[in-house]
Length: 612
Image (tube, rainbow, N blue to C red; front, side, top):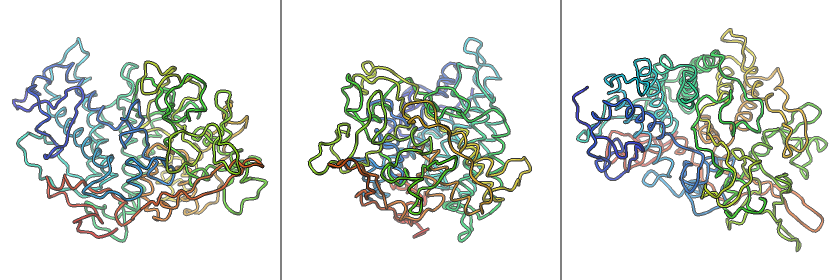
């Protein structure tokens, strides 16, 4: 065993870090007297240590109480995009959207990502430093074959932590060193290309060691496909305009050296996942996110069966009796997103715009004949739920308030709610904050990587490299082929909430130009990956104009004496999106105070670049 004396971070099986006045690489107050040498002489403790590194990854879906999402509560990251709003004015998303933050006081998800990802990387470095010396142990199933797989998992996890920070910050300090309590934190930021190369190298090393699948009792561990899919995602980001800017072509911590060939590299990486022939699109879109194991999932966070995401999605008064928790309706869908779900008519799909004929789309009957994914993702006025028909909206002319409106007092509501991760069949009783009294439970695993994303990543990279219908890699798979795999999977299930509609999405047409296909693909990605933490980063890596992020609309049902009508209204949130700054998140100033070599991102205080 290596004769080094480091100390185990507290707590061993939680890897919990706090941030005082020291660097988050290692907080001296987070130290116990349990020496790491002791941990890594025991195969059971060694493998538990690795399992707990998985726990450093952001949970995204709330399991109960106020922990889980990036904001530390029930609100998903999507509410900081044009896809969604949260009605409350007293939370971190509202402060983020309205600009009440800066690098001195950044939002929770920025500080937490920096803190927890570095904690995870440090733990990975510890594990990789010691793992080769851990004795084999037949009782715990630990032999040299297992050792190699566990190393592969750790390479993947380290790459994952780096990738989460890369999409926020760009170039990062890179180190394999196991940090001692006495070490000085002065590592400078690597360039973007160096950071991407490190992530790709870790993914390649992981893929070489990992199996394509694990035994049932190890389901959820990283696989070869997970490593290759993560590599493909990072290379796609690296090829995108924010990180691959022809007007600023030099490699730096803020962007890579410009190279149009990066799109080809990203396409080949996504093709490697497809060529495994391991994954396929799950046919039933209504059960995709509540089916614990299915053909589409590549890397997921395994959660205990629960119902809290269903509790916070379904408005209280719409539920049958027995539910006592009124906490609901947090993540509300904007009209900006609603209109992206196409309308179906006679086997054709149409984008909603001002020129669309009323015999295809009736603005006063807006929720029929929509993309099947709309009914999976959104609950709206008229939605059938467990024997009731939802009644949401504003009341005017002496009409009584619709009976199923959410009860929470707030600034606004769009009256359309995200239900993507809810199970509409379980009966909610008691309180979602008390799992013992909350009734039926459902699987609530969150897909960090799924096959639909791989196909969309491939389609984007192929289009940018070759165009929509050119078989540039010689594998018979074009950009158009890939996006149509995802698109045509979307069929109406035989369920009440799909309004008895049949059929599904037709393929995208042939004959589009590269720019036309780019626009259509971005819409497709927005719909398919809604509320899965992609939109926030996509608008940044694509450098979407700020105006699109701040002009937020709701499709409002208005109940009057003559019935219900619908109006498109502005959500008065006064959003701020300064593209000079907000394409990249700021490194928290507290971290720069510890390590002055962490040069700040463009536009933020004391950055060497004033704007993008």
